[in-house]
Length: 534
Figure 1 (tube, rainbow, N blue to C red):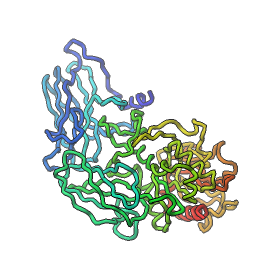
Figure 2 (cartoon, rainbow, N blue to C red):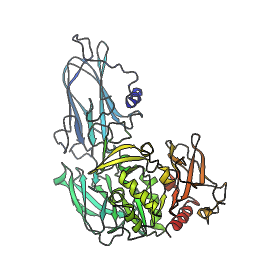
Figure 3 (cartoon, rainbow, N blue to C red):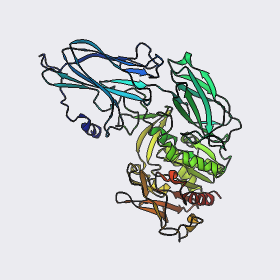
Figure 4 (cartoon, one colour):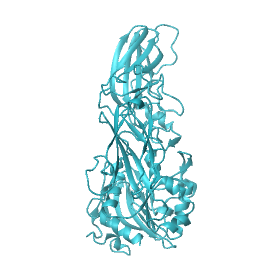
């Protein structure tokens, strides 16, 4: 019901009508509504969905809408980019035609620089004597397509069937484009060299040119060579087309065996996909729990929306990955898949002194929660460098995750593990600095070398915040606070030591990794890292 109510602002000024009356005075109907790209279907195209690649090469440059009117009227066609249901769709293009009864065709030629994604086509049909019929204005619904039409703008997409691969193994990459040529290259957070502008990573292979003319009508798999000498880390397969479109496929190279280093860094691959707004089912809306409730499960294999990076990757993931390389931290990189594959917390504790959750670790399976909690209870140390961690329980089935319930409603509040838990969020419109309040206490070592004292300010908040709760472990202390970070709610940076000797740090804000380059922040992280990894 909430999704439907949130759609109402999109329909202001429209009069929705039921079935057309027998009288010719009613609003016209669109009959046989269909779309094509001129006879060059891409894999997955239907009568309701057409793939268009507006690059001027004469192949799939246009979208052609076909329909019949059962009586004369005015047809307005709108091309919109959808977002979350609560936000108005963004108008991209529109046209209005006075048409007679009978068959008609409307052509849309997207501009060349239009972002690659799906666009919803909506129709407003008015009769000569009043009345209005609309198509394509309903909210997303599970297993139901829009009453309008959809255009998929194809630039280039790249995806991997898995989130991580072992050192030494090849990685198959699935590429979708109708460009005649693509260039593939691998990037990583390595030493010197020219940095990729979107990831800030450095090329570790030369660019390889591949002819693509024989693969222009469907996705095609290319196997990227072996990586026997590359260390565990975060890599990117970058694909650039002859028309300048770019796609990335993030790849985590995991260690051959757990415990090659005494610190593991877990990247939040489940959360990355939960915030991926790519429209895979072709209904004109992104397939995400954050769109409008229609998506029940998340496919972990999906390519990310253009340019192929997780949501706010440069803020929440690339900054910490660059810092790890710059400071020479020797770590094992793990995906959520890899953590979920660890048999027991005993195995995790035997392998690692410290496990660092580098980003927004919101979605975890029951097994992941059990393993990490057992690891903590055996004395394993934890660092949470973001906020809103271990918030949702998800169930994993093959390559999909399904959201079950908030952990706190299942009797396992996340503050009991993390030290603090989510209390509020916004859109980042009023970020404020932390204020130190733990510099003179037992945990004053956290601020050593920073020049910060109680009352000093550093860093900034962002989007979502954590606070202690009744379930926080005894002795959980606040290292720093952001007063009224979101409304009247404070954000709290916390630390506790459990009865097992485990030490747990929680940054308390979602944007903390993005501020690691600000004065004092990197030193704080370094201090905590050094203490917890001893």
